[in-house]
Length: 249
Image (cartoon, rainbow, N blue to C red; front, side, top):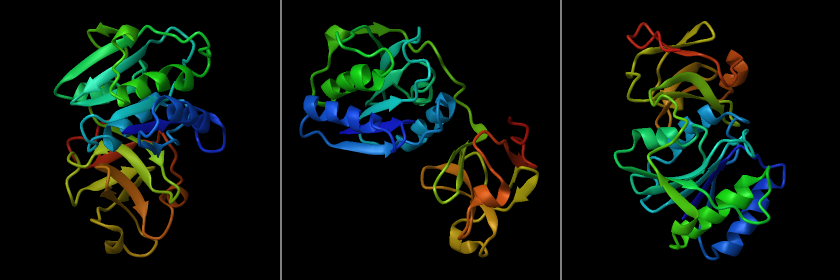
């Protein structure tokens, strides 16, 4: 199985171009569009989303992850094996949380370049072929160099900021649910929000927080948009009000 996570969006040709190449190199392989709306250019948010969304993928899954504002520059291209899953993408921090939180990892630098490799579209011309070969069982040893680890590594601790807003207006934070105890309050944009287990336990139009299905603290409004009601945007600070972790920033 091949899983795609990018900041390419759906309105441009980039996802289609990449999937067309994958179809040619890995015919019959299941390709899952997991997320193509990672906040633009934001590898830090992407790293936390990647770690949350891929935590339950089966062993052997190949994840093609591209949030790559430094494409064509000096950043390396890498493959990371983390707890039995393979991740292909740029060495710009995007893969560092899955690597840093894994019990077993291996890392390779991609030294191969196709003759027609675009300087500005490594997602299609570099990462996609490598991911396709791994997914079809043809691990490209001749195109990879083993290395000790990633060059760019983000802190693997919680990220107490808004990192994603879905189309409902629910705001995902980079705080994992196990850190925030049920019943605690969350503070965002100067407002203190109560905990609710699920949406139906909140009043209509009430803002609250809960642990979403991806295991992250999410700020939501029952039958409404938390982003609109609270004026939230990606990057806004989230605090665990009155808790030992409230100084996270």
